[in-house]
Length: 363
Image 1 (cartoon, rainbow, N blue to C red):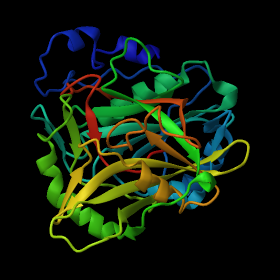
Image 2: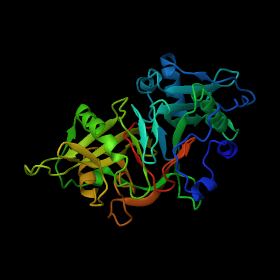
Image 3: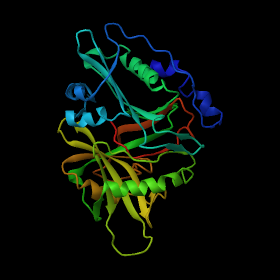
Image 4: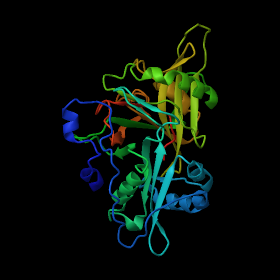
């Protein structure tokens, strides 16, 4: 996208070659505001009054050949009424919505990085909800919206953004800080082998909040870590599952898996799409991110079987389930593309192998 090639706040190839990982903003001054595209009016920040129109726009335009966004006014309003979330929309002169973009805090509280960074929750954000009307695509509107959101979030000082991309395959050369390969399965084909039960969100939140600061300098696989110190479950679309105790042993590790209702639905079939977004352990009252390579497939299959007639995605990263090419049928590995995380206006601890340790809903 041209926007990333023109701004000084995007990581460059030279940043990957020279190992200066000092935590810092790449640009301290606010950017120049980009010109509004022809035939469009300046963007506006949406409010709860726009919930229905935004839901309709996303249902009709947010998706691909094999999925669509099952947006409702009630769900999108959980973002619109959150004062920390910025939702911008741009319209044509006729009054029709043409595009949207969302900037959401990455964490409910501060973000920590293994190269020594500490950012306020309003200063580490995520670009998502970038959607252009099917009638207006390939006109540079997406790049404009990213640029204008950069301006909005930089008004009170520099801010960093993460953003994710889904691609058919991993590029040979990339400034992504991490890239994982997807595996998917139809949940009706899964056979449970382990007992599992849901953990209350408030209980999980307590474990995370008391444990997260200790993960920053843990075993990050040599690639560094970015840690959200507080999970965000804005619309209650995150389910936490824990393996049932088989015996009472003090300090016995119990596997924990977090599953996100993505609000995406498959075309054809209309199955709800879910994704494993975090794997770890509860050990003696402490929560630990997965890092030992012992494998989560049997537990993930048992959890996935709870979601009837749906599609479950798992990624190859340790936190996403450690999906592998040798996972047996009915799993399909590497046929649903890859998921990569990128960073803007901040020096990450690493490129390529950085672990993003967070639990959050994603648009």
